[in-house]
Amino acid sequence: MIQVCADSGSGGTIEREMRALKDAAADFPRAQQRFLMLTFDQLSAMTAKGVVSQTVYEWLLSKSS
Image 1 (cartoon, rainbow, N blue to C red):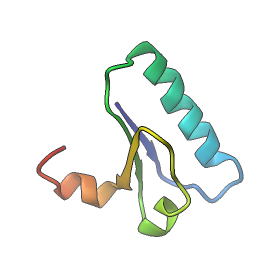
Image 2: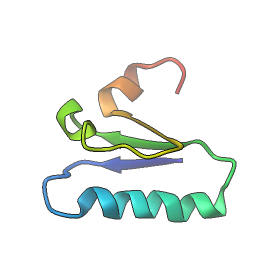
Image 3: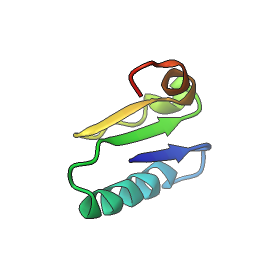
C-alpha cells in the first residue's frame, strides 16, 4: 500500500498522511506500507516503524517495487 505526499510544507501534513496510511494498514495488515515524498529534503522528516520511506523518483526507478 502506498501513500504519497506531494507537499509537506504546511503544519501537520506528514502526520495526517501517516495517519491515513496506518488507518488503511488496519484493513490490510499483511500489506507493505510505503510512504513516498517528492524530495529527499522532505523525506528526512519522515520516520515510522514498519514503513518504507523513499522519494518518488527512487521508487519509480527501482526494480524491486
